[in-house]
Length: 113
Length: 115
Image (cartoon, rainbow over all chains, first blue to last red; front, side, top):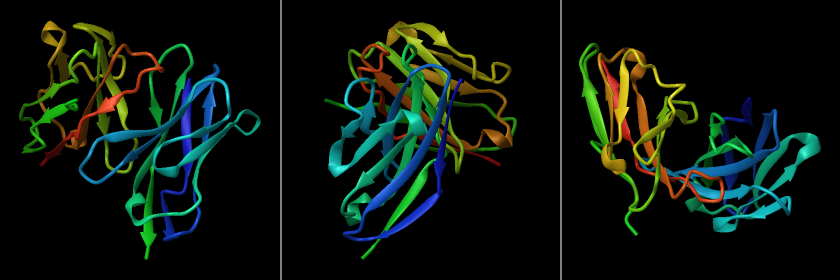
């Protein structure tokens, strides 16, 4: 079974500051890990994913995430927040051998000018 | 390419009424998913189709929910009768082949309010 815990339902950052969204997972088999972004009244859009290989994954819009197996974590970061980063972010996990996504509860990011 | 289309975008009904949602996936995508997203929670998979066959419907409340994908293209999700706890956004997604190497593309969703 797979599950995801996102620490912090709301994160507020200043424009230009570091964005850090935390995600911890549990999985009975090697996981594939994903981050999605959801803007108001829109569907989810894939930011990045980890399947195999390099544990530091770069995605769209300047985001990156690092898979740390020992910590069962897949935290999302962006060095400098932009106003357009205001959205809800979801971490998701699927078993490596069965592409079924289990989502976390989401973290809403607000960006202060 | 055109994205995943869903209609209606919003629906308000009273409990015990019936409602249907429609999804048109990206052309050529064999796999189609329906998710339920309750306010404050992440999306939860209801049903997955591969072409016009059901791959997984283990989380679908079959006493009131039904879904079909005729001809392996469009899909309809129906709720009959609706309950208050069905208030949620219903998201449709599609992918090329259902593997993790091909992204799931999501539609904008249908927001259902049950009064």
